[in-house]
Image (cartoon, rainbow, N blue to C red; front, side, top):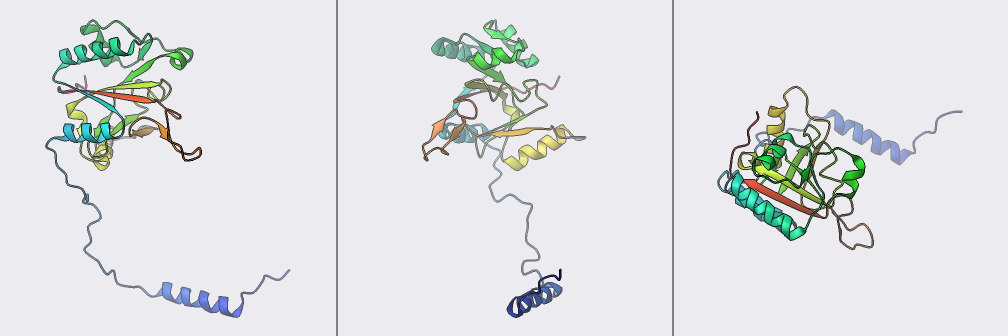
Length: 223
């Protein structure tokens, strides 16, 4: 069977395309900068920027001057929400809860428990100020589970984890994991929401319906 031949007009167009591809056109903007961010890199007041962006997306932001104020604010939230089952797998955060005599947290690892718990508590990799985004990864002790399955996601972060833009978060991740990036990097921006069904906004379909961020004005230790 002989291959079909292109029509006359089609062949003319294809010849013009091939001819145009052979001719190198000089770059009209040879000195254009593709690396510098178009957004102002303002490192002053990043916490306030994150709080504003995050709350506008429906998140709940609680600023804490130190770990003691965090304990007070967290206990107030517990009393208000009347949570019975709260899960946390992060060893550093569990140590913080133990130091502040917060005993309502369980570290038991069980899928069935996660499915019926009231809230899951995790740390994060970074907080992105400009977009109000929480950066998470599979390298965290909470893995891929506690930020997705519980109906409420509580994030405990520290001020040295706040960066200006997504580009900065990715750059910091490359420095933190120089040999290999985590198999999953999740950029969570506010509570889960979708408008796929009849264009009606529904919150909490693919993830938590509520997200709380406690930002403690202390440096997170890597030890």
